[in-house]
Image (cartoon, helix red, strand yellow):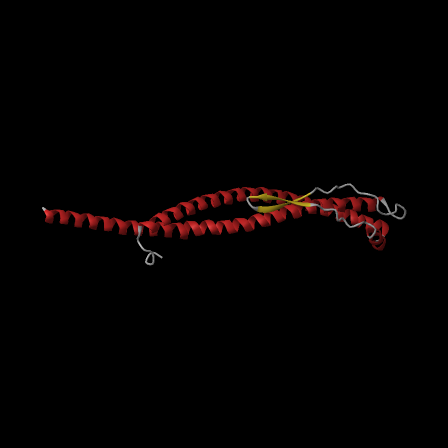
Length: 204
């Protein structure tokens, strides 16, 4: 790039302006990366905590389901489960963190509503239903957090690449070009000064 760049004052001014913008962009991107990293760490901590809760609640739910299967029989439990309505009232909102769209899932209620006849069912079935409702509530929260982690990680990777490009390619190359043009212009000024001195001596 240096060999193709004309060593003129106009190019020097333009490069100096571009370098200031590149440095400003680098600083802003670096700040963005730091903010996103802090958010990512926070979400990862939440994800770990929720995953532990999910593992515990899943185990409890399957234990309750096993009790219901023993007391009612697998076929009966399956028939009763078909009367449980599919939850479709999940509301997902988005908020922006440094330009990254992060989902917010409205909390689901862990309360259960009667959806099957009490006749022919047992308390074990009610416990299994309530336990799996808790699982669903936690899974919605886990999906929200894991999606946030993924989106933040993708954006951090992109931002990191841009920071590196500015830091290791654009800014060093710009500095090299500025130094080259400055050296050429300074050399030209010295030559002009020398010629002027020689001309003055000849006049005298």
